[in-house]
Image 1 (spheres, rainbow, N blue to C red):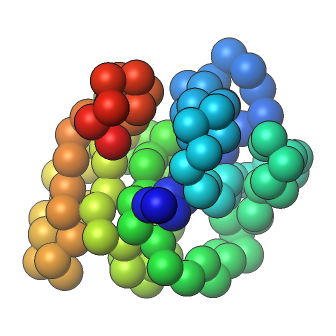
Image 2 (image 1 turned 60 degrees about the vertical axis):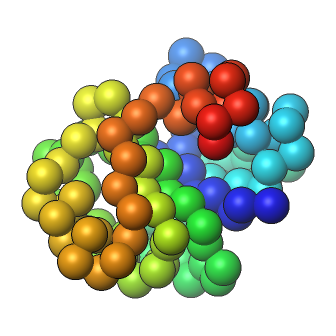
Image 3 (image 1 turned 135 degrees about the horizontal axis):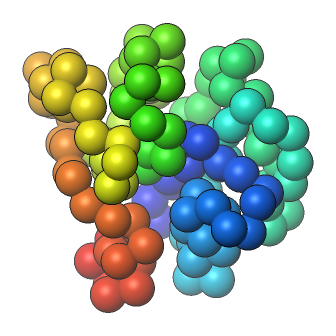
Length: 121
């Protein structure tokens, strides 16, 4: 199974990151929520982004933070050595996309929720 880091995780049910965590949980996909607010999502504690937690064997990072808030986390994102990064609508960042491609990380501009709903994840 593809371990996915939800970057920008939230316990707020009105947030897309919450919906993504719910869908990962319902479908049995392993996920690691990472954000700046404490909480628990479907049994998984939200790891503090500010502490830059070490996470091994990351297949995918799905972004739920806007490009203006990504700048301070670019090195951390790349350090997780994911196989791919999904830029959900509103998170597109050409600089991070280019850097990821240079590091042989696949880049997708897609909606994680649609991908999960249609079996394309």
